[in-house]
Image 1 (tube, rainbow, N blue to C red):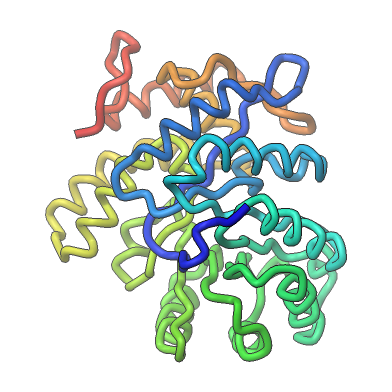
Image 2: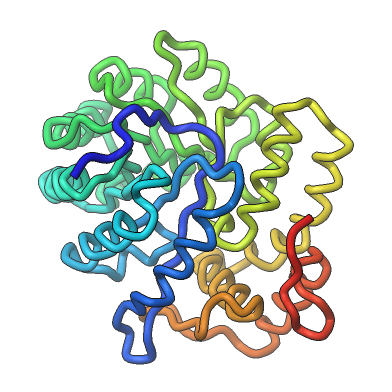
Amino acid sequence: MPGHRDYLPHGVIPAVLLPFNEDLSIDEGSYRAHLRDVGSVEGVSAITVNAHASEVASCTFDEQRRVLDITQDEIGKRVPIVNGIYAEGSLEAARIARMAQEGGASALLVFPSGIFAFGQRPEMAIEHFRRIAGASDLPLIIFQYPLSGGQGYPLPTLSKILDAVPTVRAIKDWSANPQLHERQIRALQSRTPPVSVLTTHSAWLMSSLVLGCNGLLSGSGSVIADLQAQLWRAVQAHDLATAQRLNDRIWPTVEVFYTEPWVDMHNRMKEALVLLGKLPRAVVRPPLVKLPAAEIARIRQALVAAGLLSEGGRAKKVA
């Protein structure tokens, strides 16, 4: 099934959540509604599935294929789909890449192998991406983790990957280091052809975007895609006043989504969508567990402060 084969990763790319039933099976009806909701936002350039936001670590290969199939059926004719490649080994990563291309994906978001947490050589990273590129000719997006954890790629390694694997066309930058973030933007986007830097620094999104990123790829786009798209347009238009106003609205959600423990960020986003009336329940798969009532109350207050929810509990349209 063909995807949007001319798509190059750029712009506003929300990573959607994956709703579950109480028995932990995929809630396909709620997932379809979530896709329609996020995919209809003006300014969204693509949708990401089978990534952190959709709890990919808890999904089997067959479930990942089903998620992509549902996404393709629901919004694939209108919106390009970025499919995550989450695997420890390169052979499994290549298998997922082949499945994603056959399923109509338009680009692939490649997570680093957990093996790299024990240390890496550039040749290992290059081989990982070569295996994936050998299974699919879709544009690849490198998920750049913080260097401190061992899974991030130093800039010289990034350059070697790009030289060896020309289908890499973007990075999703989670370096968590503003100076390195800017250095990567300048180095990668000045290449020929340019390699886009898509920020995932959602905890400091405006600061990141003004450095010149070519887009953003964010799990919080599952909740605030409208605000992110408006912020992106304001930054592109050099409209600082509007960008600051939008950032002020986004800030309360940042304070509740991106806090310790970080592993619960998408758990919190599910609770936000329940509060907004967009999901029937906020079930997560173990080892994640239900959030305490006090934390859900803080999420509710953040949505009110962001102008997304009335004090009476009614969702409000983003203006």
